[in-house]
Amino acid sequence: MDTDFFRAAVLDVIVPEDTTAELATILEDGADNVEEPNRLLPIKERDYLFFDERLRTLAVLQVPYCDEDALKAYLARVALKVDVWAFDESGANDPSIALNSPSREHVISADGFQGHEPIVLASQSADLGKTLTLVWEVGLTLSRPRSRNAQQSLVLIPSGVVNSPQYDEDDPNRDLAPFQPLEANVLEPMRSMAGPGANAPYLAVSRLERVLPVAQSHRHRAHIGHVHPRRWKAVPAAIARVRYNKSHTHTVVPTNIALLDMEIIPFVQVEAKVEQVDVSLKNGESQSLMPGFLPMQCRSGDCLTFMYQLQQVTHATSYTNLGLMNPNIDLLSIKIVLRIMVSATCTPVVTMEWTTHVDFTQALNPSYGAPSQPIQRSNRPSSLPVNGLITQPPVTAVSASLQPVYPPLFRSGLSVTFLSSNEPATIGRPFTWKVLLVNQSQGVARIAIIPLPRLQRQTSQAQTLTKRHAPKSSTASFHPSERRHTRNGDDVDIAQAIVDENVLYVMQHSNSVPPEADLMALTSELRIGPLAPGQCHESEIQMVAFETGTLTADVIRIVDLIKEGEDGVGAPGVVADIRDLPNVVVVEESDG
Image 1 (cartoon, rainbow, N blue to C red):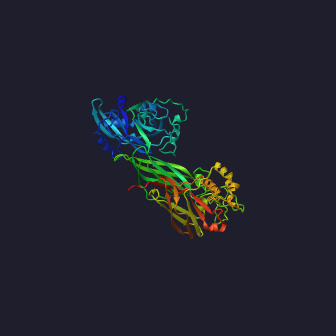
Image 2: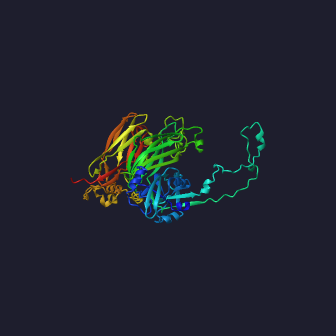
Image 3: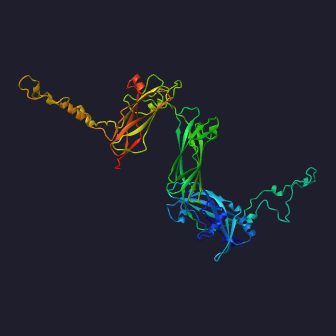
């Protein structure tokens, strides 16, 4: 009877679409649905799953009808299990072919849930007669597979093993069979001694004999069949990565800025809510630079960035506990909790957790200061140490050719910000840029801001050679027949030339490459200062555009007037060019 009972049993795994309702409510609502041929229960299921999701599944076991005592005895011999397998969907559309392919990967397993109390449903059909359907709620965490396939799918396969009664009765803690004599006691003469009393020592004879291996009895097991497995498409709900930026502020504690980038899945239209983002350092402190933003609502394709300040607290034994030899490397733990709103009743929760390493190694020369030796070198290596005797590092020199660079202006303690309007510019009409100057240095600042929307392009080599070998004077001006106006006499019949040919020749060759005229500055120069330490100043630069499209100014030149007056215009660090400027969007003037 046991063989027939378990041979008629069938297993199934169902992923209900409703993730919020109780199990009894889901079973009641499913009774009104149309039964599917390959499912034991008519419950509406989900279309796709998410990786890193805590999946709610239903393990279903259908057995022939029996009484409660017999059912409990049968369940005590059953071991149920649910396996999750991942495979590449692009290989084949048939699930059976995909399961037999070598590219499949085991994701997670869940077993032992048959020990919990199931929900039992009794039903009767013309084909199967009276049956009992047992339902367990099983939770699975869908970890990401190691293989990175283009189109991944998941298959949930239930399995059940029935152990034989002989195997279950072979228990070392079971009671002895009645009327079975005990083995002979080797310590029987010690029973008459006064010491042991009622607790006489006992040592079986078999303990002193040579133990022979006993052949184990064959374990009779039976496997429960399952319905044809279904395939679910699986996608990551979000893609996250972390980036680090070194902090340039001079602090005693090593500090990094962590930027946690997260992108919601773009090719499935869902709404998500970021409920929790935790970034913790193993041997340090983590402080959020964006507090108060959670929970955050977002949609498919949204890109989010969370900023954190990481400070390492160095100890003598901190890095040894991590198994790391470098004390500047620490362990960073990241946890992200998302709630995906697929529908009103389907709101799966995705939890992403991982750890990574953070390098707090400081730069050998963070201030990029000038060398302390009296001989200045133009190409100094960046790995030279900083001289601790210098209280304030001087500004690094720029080349004598006034090559535009950023560091001199930045290290001088002056910050210049250019702000453009959100509205597009119109052809022929002036537009304005706001200029904000902040003096963060220790001295008074006086600068000149010169906008250069278009720098003169360099001429080609052929044009340079043409200029080099061009005649310095016109032959017509020095020919004797053409110089009659210089003679004394009656033969002076030609007046003096109005325009000299030499001047025309030089003008034609000097403007061989005319500058572009798509963007022009109406403000030739801004002089700001004197500006005391800690003060700021706001001004404006006006320009005009003559072409439509997106234009970019070439450069805005900054001149340090104080240093120019002391060292001259060719001194290092006097001139710096800014090329990271806002774009100019130019449109046609509307008729209205």
